[in-house]
Length: 387
Image (tube, one colour):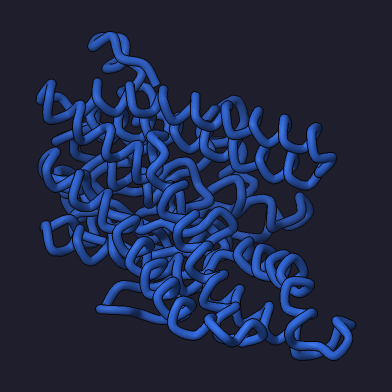
């Protein structure tokens, strides 16, 4: 999920989120489109409020088209039993975030083409509206909006069909290679390599156009889009490799069972002397000692260096761990049965590098971010894979 995105609604029970960067693109679109409507909407082709309104309307229609494009992916994915987490609109378009890979190459192909198919249908519909209204009405604003909407959706469909993973065309390429070789990971590696090549070519093409036509903004935008595609292709392949390595691995398989725990009655001065100085750990579980030796202790909270920094050194002798720790109710905890790959998402939302593993309210282990990283590195070396 993209950070700094807010949920603005739901369509078919799928959350629709808006990233702050979309607002920037919306503003740029309004500025870029305003001159196109000045001649038709304003007397004497001088800027007026009408051209600004039409430019804003077209920018919203383009945004709605991106949303419908992603909704096409999402609804088909859900139809094929692939869970959809959300749809997010951001600077470079939109993304339907799913929680799993497609069950097979056929499903991957259908999901991939659903978005461009929606865009092409929108282009045809807007083009038909233009064809019905434009003849004999050269100044018709509806026809002008329809023509621009048709062009925008046609470009959107064709651009997304470039064979650069993770764009739709790259997913079509991956589905084809997956079908031919019956292996997802090698197919994704090839599709990601093509995606990186497409990103580089887009950046170079933008530079060539900018030099020939003296349009520096075109070069800048193409470079940004090309770099984004290059990095996204690499990140998508890396995520699949990690997901493959962590398949069927649970938090219980990786967690640390031998724990150094802290009691709540310690002063911060005692805590620093016994647990912090000369140690590499950044956090400790605060527990209520178990009644029986073989029982797991109950978690009261987590005490980390981040908690410690909230107090001055003058307060260390008087304040206790119980007053400074993060209470258990506010701690992001893991279950020993949770998949390790899912735990990565929890770590992504947590400011800490280690999380408690609870069975009910009982502390059964601690999982550190580096525990997962070490396991992945060992498995990558053993299987001779690379990210």
